Length: 281
Image (cartoon, rainbow, N blue to C red; front, side):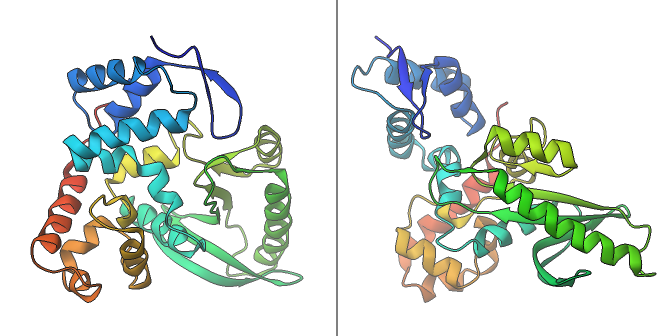
């Protein structure tokens, strides 16, 4: 019999939902019949008490049956593994924007009226200019709070004054975004909406979330690969290989981190299979 409630990563309780689990499996690329059968199997396990346990059991089953599906299903946690610093997450997000047709630059120092600011990602498309501040967290239950939005608003105001005083940039409208791999607090959302800052988190806002952007572009981080150890994933990141797609172009990097023969080929096949998977929703 399915559990009545489960504990979220934030510590809150929520009702156990077969529909939600089935939808997440479908998003990962599972066919409907398989998503339904796996959902029913997990729902019959009596000792489940948290969403983390639901995820872990689904992931274990997917990894045993279909590793590329497991990699896609585990995507949120794969982003968490891009740490411990925020730099790889910034590079991954920049790649998503480039895939959508933006002209992108990372880690720029931009002069404001009062001080200089290091912007994680800047982008342009169709005459519009965007400033992105990336907030990376390596704990899934962590939420970016209103303090981050207050800080970004102060930075934006300083930059805006400088842009308006510069003939080269006067009249340009710069859109300010905060992007996180986890969630925002409700207070951060309210404040950002009030002052005109756009937010993007894992599932927010609907239609323009980080998860949906990844689905649209088909880009996945190397940390999603199930055939690699955590050490090997970090070695790839240290070699500036962030995307599964890039492994096909830089096959030699796998040998550089000690992967040869069948293991080398398994990783390449999995990377290609992940790129080929389609979202079923």
